[in-house]
Length: 177
Length: 177
Image (tube, rainbow over all chains, first blue to last red; front, top):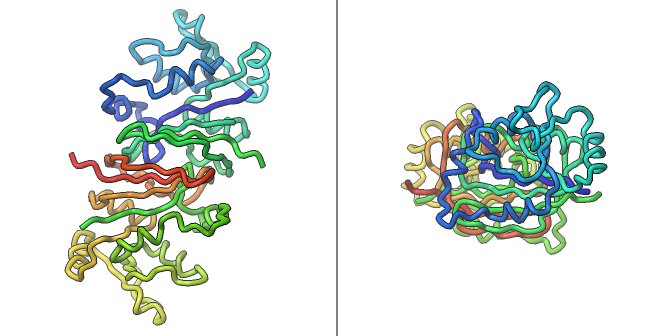
């Protein structure tokens, strides 16, 4: 019952500009409108956990991008906009307990999204695999993917793909020690 | 007359533990004693510029690893240990002027090493290519490769190589805009 990260970050490890802006990523030339494997990845996913900041960023997109249930990890957020109530739930508290509850609902393959949420999962050793697309730009400042979580975590590189001149996609799985 | 970066960093963008320790990198299994292309790279290099911290880390190695002249970028360091005087010089002041002086001495292909020094070169748009080996470990804390330089820099991905389960090497060149 694995938890996965699937995310893009800059060469200097940022997933967004300081204000959450993603233009540096969305503006990468993509003449064939390629999704670079995202829909194939999503087909294996049962649900998505993200933090409040990521949720608010996604709410700003022109359309809601997920067909799978989304769980917003937040101890402060209390309500979901009515229009989203069939798509989104709020979860809070102990991560292992949250995951156990999701597993009971047959949500086994979980997509973990957003810097702080990924860091929380890593600290509790709850990330099994990561697909990280590195974009060949230094942003200079922004929201950090890994931050400084304060403990070591080891992964193994399964595969690497150069998508184009701007992006390289690396597949990691947790190293069992 | 290009300036290159050739460096390894952790998944979370650190080039050393907070105290400069490199065991996390040196302990990666390497049964064939492979240098992963370092000597081939060094054969194209005329000289190395590094900061004081990197210099002091290298001084702690069991032997001096460089056959090429080393320039330590420091405004505070005034002398070099006698035993190193044929191998190492101190340089300080304006980077463009330092590079012009090196070019006059036929030192054209320059290896730029160490986090702070790389960041200083990037800020002045003086990095032409980077070969970055990403190690599949999250260190959690340490000395940052790119820090937060505060400005955007764009590169293009020329090539990517998975060296083994632990390392992927990506070749970047500056995007001319």
